[in-house]
Length: 623
Image 1 (cartoon, rainbow, N blue to C red):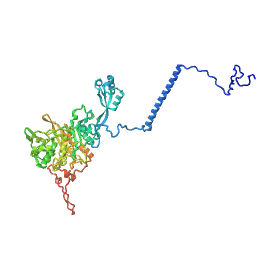
Image 2: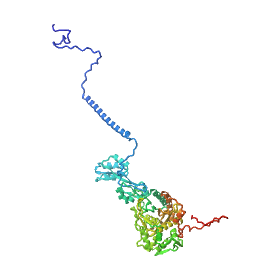
Image 3: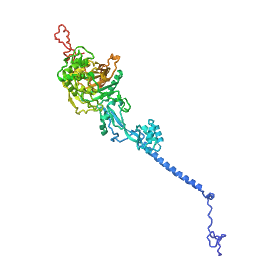
Image 4: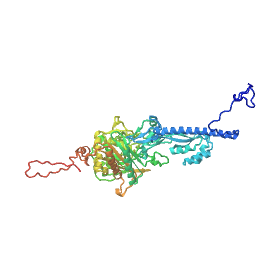
């Protein structure tokens, strides 16, 4: 062989193949169609690379944002749909048991809210942190229009590190300032006192200042107690229902008689609790600043006045308690009493001698003077001191007046005091003393705090039970037969005493300037409550036939009040002519307490012919 084999493996015997190389035959053609060969890609430019990188970054950013919003959406869905957030709920600011305020509530005897504290926000600034005072002041005034631009600018431009801009903002005002985002301006948590009853109890509850310290009324009198025990409400003896009735009738009386003011008290004679007390005009305790001082003046406790004929209550009790005078004793009321350059006379002189019962019935000044002449000056002074007329009442209000008493206490003073002139006391003095005269003789210190049912009531015996019993009859006699007839309310056995006193201006009394009052009590068979009304400078009307005395002005108001509060106090309505009622309340002008002997005998008709039944005369009850 010559080394050439045309039938050998590929590569052998091919042209150009070197001797000794291996020949590889070409691949067999594929039965499937083959894609056309691609032309080779051109090299990428720098612009293409930058665009590709930007596209990548945008895709990553979009993925992150999508993830975040997806997470937020899931949270919101869980909070609203899965956790019950879709239902309206009451927002609770603090957990129960936490002390939310630093001052205790004040309530009436039934738990009705009279004063409470609410958390508020006050606006202050650190001028050192306010970069643009002019701009900041303009923004603040736009949000709080009641602010003064110059005042705010001066505060923000000063050198101090702390200045108040506005105290006690409303939530709406706070939100408006918060949206401004002024650096150096912030909020301070404070409290503001609110009075749900408003003017209705203003002279009792009082009010606080901007720093929540008591400035008047019970807010001032119990300031320490209210701040040291913020979680325990201060419960008063006041009944808000009675307070409303009392104020309504006092306001109507002031309007009807064009008076300059009035005072009223509802008093529990058994324990000394003041159930209602009103002084008109009154004020809004929410904003007491800038008011007429007359509106802030408490006529019921701070004002001291000559009480006029209501003082005949105490003159009569004094006379009975000495044992020297009986209700049937007669005293000259026909002739004036002269002492020095003064002459004492009666408003309506009956020109005859009067029994003690008639002196009280007709409110005779002359009879009262004759009685105290027999008793003596020393006995009168000692009695009036025992009744509390020479010192403040001890009521918890800081607005408690000092009585004006004569010094020295001479004979002429004793004469005028017997009919309510020459000594000035507050209505609260008069009511507390009168309660002791009709409740069995026990003096209870008046209080505005609710007494505990099982608590001890401070008591002092000031008159005898016999004196108290007779005074109850005298009270009833004035309403059934005397000057207080317009106070009568059927079924409540009302009694009382009228009072009219000319006001002293300078050194003289003004005849057309008077204090008209009525002290009523009910039920007189078992006294429980006193209702007292005093009207300052009432003017006579055609309806009252030109009179503006206590019987025409104050007594009708007391009657209307008793009629409305009787059911609220659960006082039962009784038959006033029932024997058991008459046995404890009856008195006539002669001083007799036996209603049966006072009735004229009634002759029974003759029995029918042929009857064998004996007939006896009977007596009828008075009408």
